[in-house]
Image 1 (cartoon, helix red, strand yellow):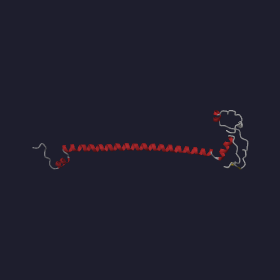
Image 2 (cartoon, one colour; image 1 turned 180 degrees about the horizontal axis):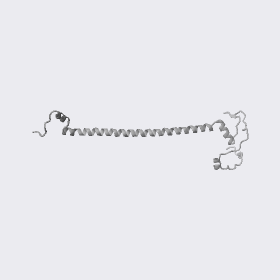
Image 3 (cartoon, helix red, strand yellow; image 1 turned 120 degrees about the vertical axis):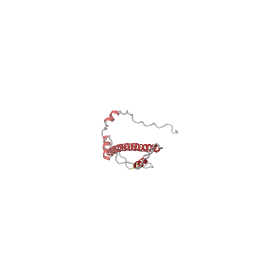
Image 4 (tube, helix red, strand yellow; image 1 turned 45 degrees about the vertical axis):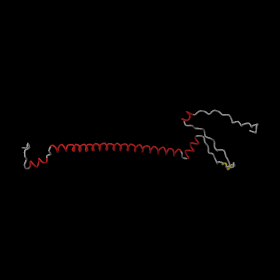
Length: 157
């Protein structure tokens, strides 16, 4: 005799759908593997999404910093252009006491002077130094007029 009762009809069909102990034991590792793979995949997607979000924030910060630095560079370039304009250079040269040089004379390779050399025209303006230069400026030491060397008595040397 069998310890199991015999099932008939609908109960027999339902009993065939329920796995026996041996089939249940074989299915457990597979179910655990699927659950672990799904959980690992979800955790991996979460980590990947977080890394992408962090990279997007860093990119946004770097783009903002690049824009600020570009604006600063353009501002500094405008300042340089304003200071290097011919009229600004001429005004600053006058403030420093410089005068116009006039027509230049040129020296050719054979030693002849081409053109007529002229001294600079115009009275020099008083020297105006910015306040920061006055704080560090020192008066130059007085120098004696350069003496001309005496002719050598020994022409053989």
